[in-house]
Image (tube, rainbow over all chains, first blue to last red; front, side, top):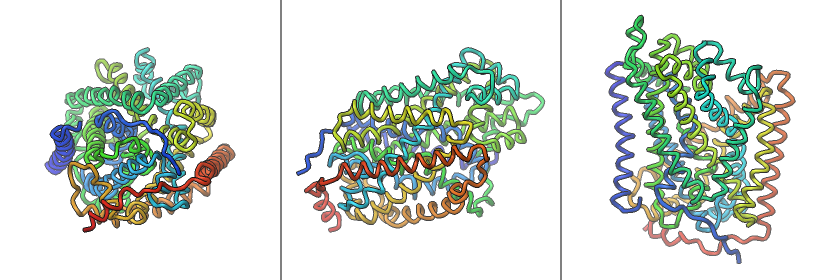
Length: 33
Length: 528
């Protein structure tokens, strides 16, 4: 696996996990889950 | 004066998010995405993929969630009536018939494939699957015999699994939105993630099991999928493949989410809920599915073998190649069982959502009540499914797959995007999206929803019509023995479309549009 592959994997996984965490945390903080 | 019928509501926000995520997460996430990525530039594919997600997938999700909620508060849950109410134009409702026919036709062939997954789950336990998988070419023969296309497997058993699958789907729908779909999703979606993580963990810890090829290891397997080939980004077909994958993976633009969202309350947040379901779909597709098939196949079959496998298509990869890979692992039967159970759950959460538009149409428009509506839909689907069971060898399934799973999807998605941004109007649309929302979308999405998404969809529609629909319409490449079956399938499809158009006409005969447009005030406020 090249450095480029690792960077793209990290960015993609990070964006998806980040979005999921943001959505769930916002919902929980809003008390709407 | 028209009085909207009483409609069910979701029990919780988590329930509706899991149900929509379940609708989106299907076989395509696990089988189609990894092959598409590996064949179209590896990591570089993710660039057009995420761009398409932002410009096409997310806007379409927002459109279906918002229009669905809007229709639901007026007492409607399917595309024809939602289009009529949202646009106050009676003619546009006839474009919405695709939003009922599309999901139902997908269900008709999808549920049969889903039943194979249940059968393979069973045979992973009996040992028959692993015996076939261990013997190279025998796995292909096992699949064909299971499908009734070759000798060796009792077709009665295949049929029993079909009946069980069919019954499970209708049982869930029969129990309603809250007591059926929501409860089912709350149990099955966590199970799906758990099973996915189990297989993912096994693949990630495979190391380099082939002592003769130490470079056939997991790290390089991930490299096969993720190492970017940026030169492929100059190829238009790579961008089209990425847009297509985003379109299919989210189940947006075919009317299923429209119907699910119609059971929301007026104050429910569609922005955050749709973003959460998108994130769960992407988690399954890019992270879980991307860590299973390609790395596992690379480790056991090497880079050259993997090219051959990928060319065999996503379907063979799931049913034939994966059992062969599991047969090389210690406790392979357990992972094969887990794999097929996971795919069955992914299929079931999707197929349930395909039924709801037809049930909601009968229930909302003719007020027959849920149970009668479910029974009518079940009788129709049961008869229609037998066309697929009997006509499998004559290409009926492939024919239905193309029209329902590809063509109808793009057509309805395009119609929805144009109606939402241009006929409903972007000011009302923007106000309606944000009603009850905890977060606000960046203003750039106004431009995306009004201009970019419809343009993107029209380009996709024209390209696919030119490249795929015209050759298919002219029956290019259809074997002579399949000709009558394919033609018969098309005649049945056209008859169904005409019948549903007549039903919509009948249901709306003399019915006025709702008196109050609840959103004008908000839209005016939004403008000022």
